[in-house]
Length: 360
Image (tube, rainbow, N blue to C red):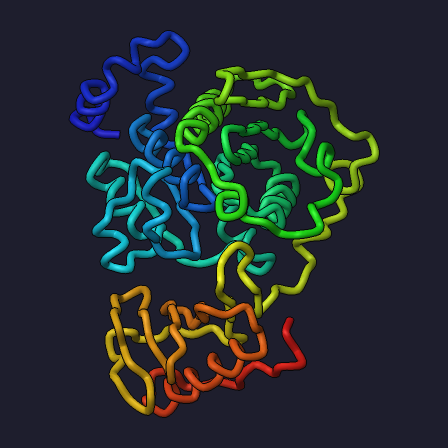
């Protein structure tokens, strides 16, 4: 790092450098650190902003959704204009963080984390932070972390309560040690149970505090934080590795070996997500009204459409949300009709459609 850059770093983080556990050497270490955050909603944006302000040099934010009005109450980062402009959460996060600390490299990934892309997105970082509400996704993170010996921090929030657990492969329990099986239903707790924004701030502050210690090389205890913000109580529970854990002991990668779902009824929302089988890049700027298709709003990343009365959110990788329905059969028909139109417009080259009786 050039002398002028070090001088700027020392000036910017002068109060932080005074902390004896950090100092100039620690600040430089943070500047060279790489962190991935899976999920860019309430917890993810809090984590990302804290890391950027702390001076972590590279942050990759991964999220598949767009900013919605209901997101604004529990995050300090998003604004009403993000909702109006149909911004993907990862893109909005990147844009806002760039204004906070332009020296941090922010990589935005507008996609879901899947068994097929998880190692590519997570295996080149020093630490992974949990910003998702989906246990299935957390198990994928857990397997990538254990397989590649990457520390990660689990964060779960609901209502007034939260749990946080740092996971250091080979030293602490992994997620499967303490949660051997995922719940039967994959539930987004923010949509089903609700959440108060203050508990998000408490949980993410604890998580990022441990993240900094891990990045600086400090030892972390095997502990589960249980946070009750209604009573302003934080309990630390000592946890132990399962000597027969199928993952961190027996190295059985159940979730990384699973086939990706292509049709998902989004829990807590009146919509169905449909994922094309082909890799594609849809030039959304070329979308026009035609054959019953009406373009409501579009940007380079996502478009809001109406097709014969059905509302659709279409992402530029071909992933689509069919709104106002939980009927997968109906959603598939709408999706296939949309992609037939896209093919006729010359916006995609290949589309094999999705069979109604083959939904995986």
